[in-house]
Image (cartoon, rainbow over all chains, first blue to last red; front, side, top):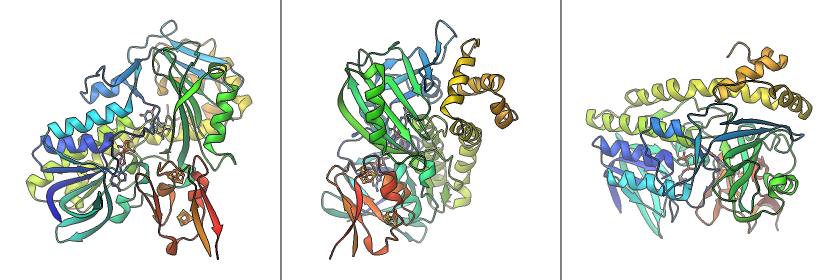
Length: 394
Length: 60
Ligand SMILES: Cc1cc2nc3c(=O)[nH]c(=O)nc-3n(C[C@H](O)[C@H](O)[C@H](O)COP(=O)(O)OP(=O)(O)OC[C@H]3O[C@@H](n4cnc5c(N)ncnc54)[C@H](O)[C@@H]3O)c2cc1C
Ligand code: SF4
Ligand code: SF4
């Protein structure tokens, strides 16, 4: 069977759904496929997003998929010293939410469908070839072989990022740029402040950090990301240690186990080819410092969808005509990531002792806003090493 | 001959596929497919797996 369309989006995560939605809203015929039988499930995420990010994307928060509104941040040094950033200490006009990704991802796909996109689930793309000024993707759905011919194909296939390689883009991640993550969703979690998200630094999670993200009541995502180049233990083994040693999880019980890769090496250099664009994790559009990629995936999706629809109208699907997408991503996403990458490298160079003394120095600091940039500015004030490595950037 | 063994606790998260420099791993919803003829045994797929679900095994 051969199906024809203007735009084919491969992957119905946040990146793909927003791409499909905006391509359809702007007049293109769109098909979006996902190999999953249930969009959003299993989740591979700690589910934190900033309110500001959703607002910028004009996505109204819904009680169907927001589980928790946050009002604070707690940063924890290896020896347990905490730096609290909450309403009492600083104004937090733009904190965040914890989502229910399984529901959120479905709703983003529903919005794409309402805009006119056709969704095919349980459909896996397994190859691609060029055919004149089109691409033909081979796919499989419930035992049936399909061919989908599209003027523009969009790779939104997440951290696996194989689709981009089919058109010659270099998307394979090096292990040093791929966080290996493991998480339990737990009940009976006793957090000191169940309205604050916790970030735990140091050797508990070599090359990354551990987190506790509250989901309301006594429920929380308890997880960590590590770089496998920095430890011999697996993410799962580190997670078991974290849960065993953390005061908040002494009586906690898991109701879900999640794992996954999070690309933190900064955005890929090349995001387009003739008839092709790459969005979201597959383009490595994840904040290298926090590992957060939901908002940037969706932001890129908006750009990609609009550029795709415009190219369809113009009848020009060349890499040159699609390069507007690349430019918008570089300007709005890539530049920030370059700076955050340097901060990540600096943080990873710190020993547990150094982290402990920074947390001590932070006890007396007054902040009036919190965001990573503001924290780094303060860090530069208390740490000579930070001044040396990051002084010029902030 | 060396083959890649996928343990039964694999969760099909796809992290291994993301790092395979030769793009040899196809992750389906409930199975993994290897193009073993082209595998260079670099083992980075084994290294990144969050749950150590991959192992090289010698078979006859
Ligand atoms: C443990 C963990 C915790 C995280 N925590 C956070 C967090 O708190 N906040 C945050 O912002 N980000 C977080 N992230 C990152 C975030 O999950 C991703 O950045 C986000 O999901 C990217 O969206 P995406 O649409 O690009 O990819 P995905 O959400 O991965 O979607 C890709 C989709 O493509 C489909 N697919 C893949 N290959 C094919 C194929 N060949 N054919 C058909 N379909 C295919 C997949 O089934 C999947 O549905 C975390 C990541 C991990 C691993
Ligand atoms: S990284 Fe491990 S758990 Fe994930 S798909 Fe590969 S083998 Fe399975
Ligand atoms: S050993 Fe290397 S080449 Fe072989 S499948 Fe794993 S990552 Fe790919």
